[in-house]
Length: 340
Image (cartoon, rainbow, N blue to C red; front, side, top):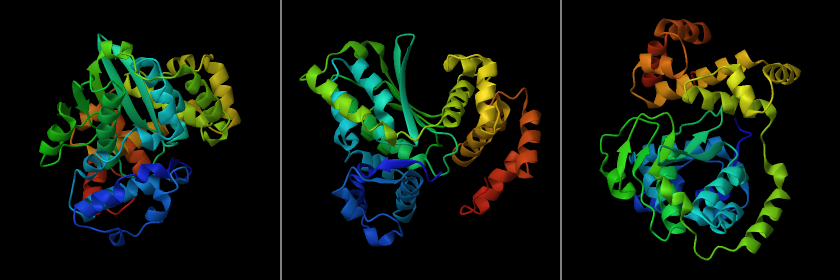
């Protein structure tokens, strides 16, 4: 969806990476004036178009780990005011909370979150529903930047235990081991960086509570940059519920602190329904999985909370006029086609 925007700071390191790989900006037919925007990091650009540019770079330069290389040239500074707020948090845990709360002021098409489970800290980067764009290079770039940011905040004390990426493994996985310096797993549901939970209590040196308050006041004064609406938030919560194995309306309404009747009424007022959003999110996730993963269809049906593969296949055929396998085969034979 073109309404999703990202700050032009996301272009940091793009031209340098292209040049190092023997290319030039002249190779790309893009709506961005990259040299101009590099000096205007607070401008907003189309996030889907940016994702497409990353994918084009990987293909034209025949470098499947382009995003990973570009991530080496980015740092917390690209987040602008959000990055400054994060750096003023008293601990790593508070910094991650700030990043979750304010990330939309840098990127309106994605979300970040952090949670602790059984002594493990899991930091997650995910995309908003209805986003139509290639995602592989961005996932790799995010993983690389996340490692650098966490190490910067902790004065190199933090180390990742494992990283999960939502795409199939490339033929050469050595760059991932070399740059991320931990176990890397592919075909995951989303991008997840895993580390020890005790790092959330690690202090951030040189943090300033007073500066943090001033920066928070500034960013809240610009809250109109948040493009979220109620329907978008519900779709996002449905996706999170699916990833956790339960997609009931009761579960999603509880996240919003309302009962299911209120949720249904608010959605009806916007001309939609819970079931309509559920199916939309399911098909979005299914198409992303079929594009990026080599996992089984049975696993996909389970992830989408269908009772069995045949139920998912029938629903998919009704939506697209072909089976999931046929859809994937057609996509591979005509990679430029937009089948969803």
